[in-house]
Image (cartoon, rainbow over all chains, first blue to last red; front, side, top):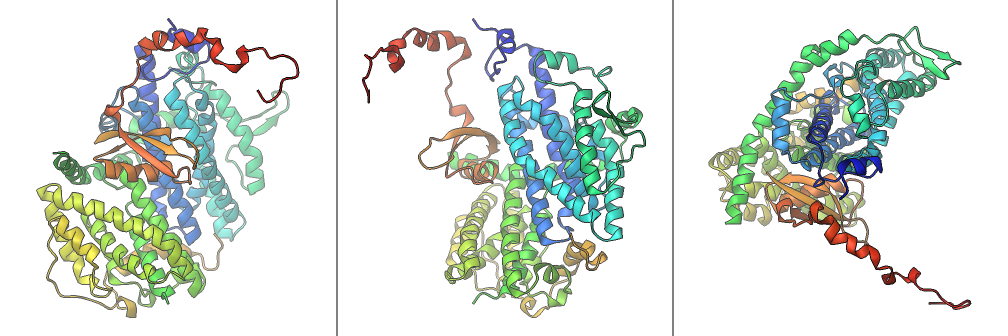
Length: 302
Length: 208
Length: 90
């Protein structure tokens, strides 16, 4: 009889109906649900700019991108449902605060340049996090991530292109771009989670091959990618300690304000309340539509 | 001939309305669906406006009275029933228009998209009309609010009348309004355009 | 809302392949949601949707009795057979 541990040791995928430790199942549900919620809440900071996009081409791009995020949320809820939990339960847990979403989405998007900074930095950080998840030990999660990573490659590029255009535009556009990068740089570094010394779930998740690399390793990989990209943009990353360390073969960077991370995570970010209120009101206002569709389906089934 | 400015403006304004649904739809699946409708219409708007001039100059630099869209598409989203009724009525008109112009390349591409839109609206009208008392009541209210704006288009086709009958919804008996094609709009267009144009106008001559 | 499994035929000549799942109140909307969700980038030319609770699946507990017995029957594969030198098209 092949056991769960045999599968993990052999680098095989665990599939929905296989025996698995209860803690593996609940860890996955928590992580996949948080990931799905992040896609859905993550539509809001960008969604509010679709109607104000400054050209019709940019409007189409942003609309397609935000639509993808809804799609990615759905792929992930689907993956979570294979673990025996219903999407409704997960949405309830989001709505009453028992489950979280990435705190990056609790920052506001006051200018159009934020669409560029989100694409370049936030989606860039997400991709660095997500690519290893394509090899995650749980089959449905890994498959959802393969699809998501494939689709997301355009998200980061459109953000970079958008910022590049602003950085080479009028002086107002350039300062808008720099301001957005100043505001999003540190929060995007926080997206990789707490330092390895303080990460509570990391060791177990690595042993289960849900996670493949440590938070700090991924963060370093991201910084190393961004520095030359920022140079080509002609924008500055807001960290005076950022410099090449030939000995390590990596960029050194400054201390992250983990106090801010914890405050935002705990619900005290600039936009936490707005994001949840918006999400809940959409859900509540849609109740009569869902009810009508259910009633129609029941009537047709008779 | 399809009037590039009239139909281009219709598609642009209706797409902008649908963009306002993003993150607010009744289900996540519906969020994806409404965004798809918006993307189709935005694509058609860009092709048509480009025939009439520069798409961005036309979209961002005209005043409300210079827009030639019909009054129906500028009506607010209201609840989901309003949005679906508006979509049924407009896609019915546009489908017939495109269908009558097979030699026009935008119509030839657009007719496939709009056939899907019209069918999609039909499915929802049936569910809302026959679903619950509340959905029937809301859909009736939406029909009464939006039917006055059909006079400016061709009259609703037998397709629409059949859908309403099947959904046990009555055709409202209400006075008709028109004026959009002459630039005489309802009060709803100006705020919609203000939002659409605000950033572009704040940076004259900038590239995006 | 009911859970549906979605199968997409990527191109003519290929079989439908499981793409994922979604929620819909009924089959007609399930099909349209599947179109929007799984074929936004021309990934398909045909879609099936099946209510998830209508699928009967083999159990992982039966995996050994179901699938292992096939392992010791190499004579079902052409590589089992030795051919004399020089034989072609066989």
